[in-house]
Length: 218
Image (cartoon, rainbow, N blue to C red; front, side, top):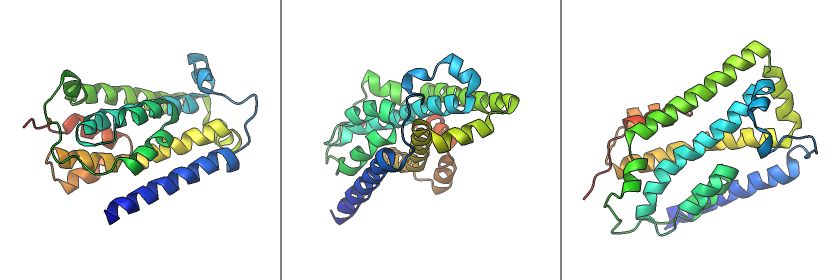
C-alpha cells in the first residue's frame, strides 16, 4: 500500500505541475496561434515538423490504448475514459489514471473477446509501425527540403500550442516503458534485455506491439 501511495503522489504532482506550466508559464496564447483544426494537409506543406509531431501524438495515444484497453480486464478503475481523453489531451488525460488505477483484481477476466483479440493482434502493431514511420519520415524529409527546422524552433519558443504539444509528446515517450513492463508481466514475458530495446522512443514501443506474445487465456 505504501508503494501505491507513493505512485499516486508522484503522478498527481507531475500532472499538477504540467497543468500549471501549460496555463501559467507557457507562452501566452495568441489569436494567430494554430489549434486542433488547423493541422490540415495545407498546414503540413508549410510546417511539416509541427504537423508530424501533432499526428504522431495521435499514434502515441493509439499505442497506449492498445495496452490499456487490455488492462481494463484486471483493474477496478476503468481506463477507457482516460484513454479516449488522451486522443485530445495526450498524457494530460492519462496521468490521473496512472495515479488512481490502484491494485489489480484478485480474479481478473481472462476470456478473450473479439475486441481483445483486435487490440492484441500483431497486425495492428505492424499497421501502427508503418503509420508512425511514414509520419516521421515525412516530417524529416519535408523539413530538410524546405529548411523548416528553424521555423519549428521559433514556434516552440513562441507558440503555446506547439510548446505544450511537444512537451506532451515527450511525456508520452517517457512513461510508455511503464506500460510496456506492466504488459510484459501480464504475458509472463520476463526479458530485461528486450525491455531495454522496447524503451527506445516511439519505435521501441512499436516493436513491442509487433513482437509481444499473445495473451494467455486461462
